[in-house]
Amino acid sequence: MPERRLRRLTGADLAALVALERAGQARPWPTARLEAALASAEHAVLGLEAGGLIGHAVVARQPFDAELEAILVAPAHRGGGLAAQLLCGVIAQARGWGSERLLLEVRASNAPAIALYRRAGLVEDGRRHGYYPPLAGTRREDALLMSRPLGGA
Image (cartoon, rainbow, N blue to C red; front, side, top):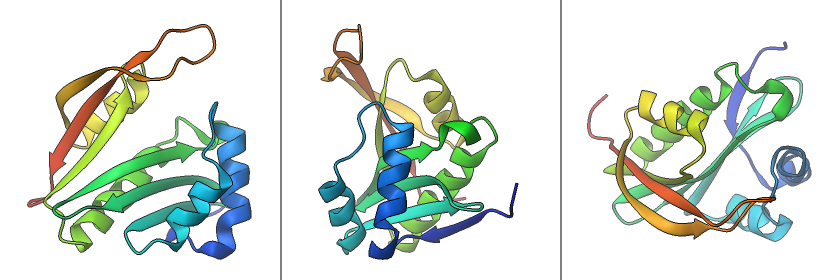
């Protein structure tokens, strides 16, 4: 695999970002939403490249916290620690903003993501019952609310 590089994406990366979303998500973000995140001063869209865009994360700055809105690794590149690398970039970005905590929501059935977040020091704070719309053949699903303080290492 070519050398990996994590960087903040810009509007020039929109086409690659849209392609990654469509290839890796059952419900990809609309192009307009991705474009807005790239243009927003209150968001950072981080991209992981290795011969092309293979992963991304979207983090939003709030008054005291930062919220991970999305994290995605291309299906062909999953299982190799790339999501952890993206999450480290998100945490660094949130700390750079002076955020006190990192917040996120995750499908209760997404065991790999939950394990990733726990390894990174996030803990479950609560649950939103029936938050996520059903995926093919399933019912509405709960969201786990997770957070991690950012004051220390």
